[in-house]
Image 1 (cartoon, one colour):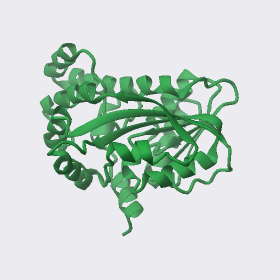
Image 2 (cartoon, rainbow, N blue to C red; image 1 turned 120 degrees about the vertical axis):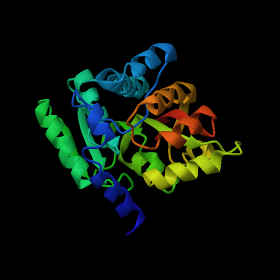
Image 3 (cartoon, rainbow, N blue to C red; image 1 turned 45 degrees about the vertical axis):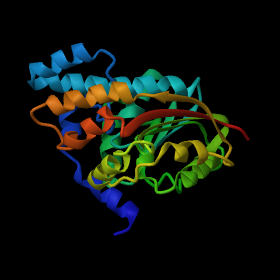
Length: 274
């Protein structure tokens, strides 16, 4: 099985998983959370049960909403690409926030695409929020289609970031915005490769160093306009995950990976110059 087949197989197998169990509101996330008040968050987690799971889920929703601020103005008729849409969590939140925004989400997983379409129907936004199976490196879209691109914890599955930047530049309009949120290997940390390797084995990822996000965009038209270090707030999120009695099992290395900063959590915002 090739690389992308392995990624698809992983997500085809994740059905009634940890992410699904957290989603009492029907919004299924596949990404970290942000915690800015660690003490309050940990109090909720220590309550256990539904309160603890809601605290974790709320922090994941907070991450999406934090990232949306970097997408720029998305007015009437705007088109957004959700590159690596998972089960549609971010797209559904964006659809609620921008009632006239049209969204196309792509995932390698047939199951995820179907689950996202079902979720869109349940929320009544299926006419403007579409999900399908497809690769973010070979998008079935015309050149200059999108006003914005959202890639939340999906570029970890891309072997070479240059390919991602080139393909998204092809399908984006001039002056489009691109927001990437990603796990990043700390190339200057002695344990960076160790924790990246543990995550790679568990999640079928190829975690990149920061230079891949900074230098990979060179020559593609994407210009970096903002970079945010979210490692501290996501380390707090993983501390709560580690305190849960039942998590995904990856807390044992993800929590210390971010707490030690061997793994970094970054937001990168770009603008397309054409």
